[in-house]
Length: 413
Image (cartoon, rainbow, N blue to C red; front, side, top):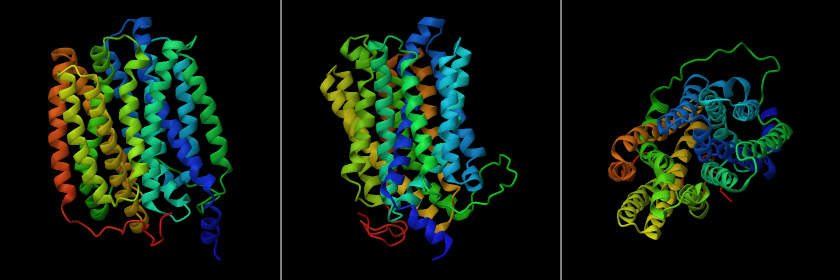
């Protein structure tokens, strides 16, 4: 048995895989945790909605630039070291939040946080595929989708609860997340190396992400799905809390954050229940659910019908989860079978661009035209995008792996 085989055999223990899933959960929870806190920061430092939007844009900018300029860092350091570096960077961002003395410090904290998230997402997908006992790209994609969606949901809800009930709401979330991050870092370091890496590292410098024709073609195939599904996330992140506050006539930030829990929670449940769908079926079903869900939410809000609005949000979340699972599985399979590691950073850079542009645009539109008009018009645009993406995804493309089979021919468990 050669060195690579030994490393592969050692990496098949379930807790190794679950550790990386847990790390993705914690980092994504950290990415959404500051959102419910912006109201308190606004009261403390007297800034408006535009500043909050710019703070979010700093996070997205940090993630996108990291993915585009340092997306190949995992090839240099190895995915294990890159995940450790990502966790360390995230913890630095927590320190920046805790020591923040003005809005400028929030810009810096969110920028650092974006860098950490970019480092993690560029490496976690391939790590999950490597550490799964059957090296199954579909199982890895489903786990990634579940951890991402539930992490975003519970991070926002936890901070919302801290705002309502914790004695120090601007401190408690970051202290808890720091403890979880330290635990994740220790566990990741304890995983036996699953890659052969040189003892002495070569010098490294940032390089703009480049792709050949084949990986570029794979990425172009998932562009419509990624754009439609992540734009939906941007829609609810930008306006969801304000929409619920108006719909339920409440100033309770924890209650208003419930819509994020519903969207992202169902975004995690759907891939768990339907993880055996092949990539095309998951993407087409996800797009159909996006169309129905956003449409029902807009109708429910216009009719001031809370149950209808939240039902639409749940269907929308399920659609996002399936789109994320299908597109991530397609890309991860190409990374495994074709040896194109640059695909994952490119994929997530596209995803963060798709979610950040709506957040910034909707923040500006809501300030000028009102939340209701911004939600209705952007909802219609998302429905049209999802329809187009679903039609494109349904067209025959490359042969799919059979349901229940991994890219390497092993049966998924």
